Image (cartoon, rainbow, N blue to C red; front, side, top):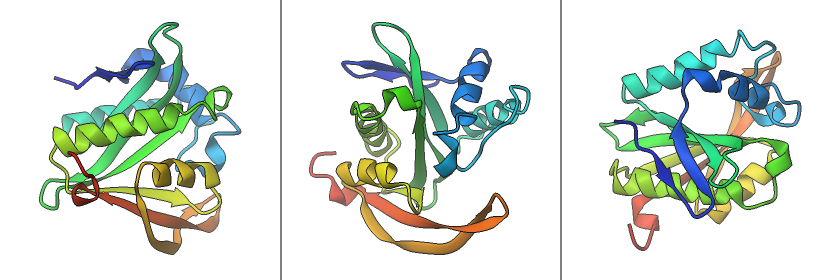
Length: 179
């Protein structure tokens, strides 16, 4: 069963096929996609992302949640983990938020909930975050959550026909005082 949870302000629910237009809104938004790994030009293309979310859960290699305001039921963003390794007890977290919801502490709240789940329910040892150089706001989110920047992966990926470098952050179970 998919693990839903909540905070005082938000519900975290499984991304389902009916969310495709919301996912398209986020992953086509000109303020979201400059530092995000994927983007889509059409609603139809977004079916690839929907398949990805479903495949992660079915193969038990990750899970992604839509972040929903508890009172208005407005969808504001998404957060999740992928690249889960049972052998090494590690995974990678990711997230995005619609720009009208930036600077409200939403992603810090969401990431804290996912970290708690990963360490306490999934028994992770290591959580990674790969952040594109220049994404200052995202770096602040993981640093606030206690992640350590380990270094820069130079020219690590290609995006828009150019190489980009990613900052490698990690958070270990031993970094958390009370898990």
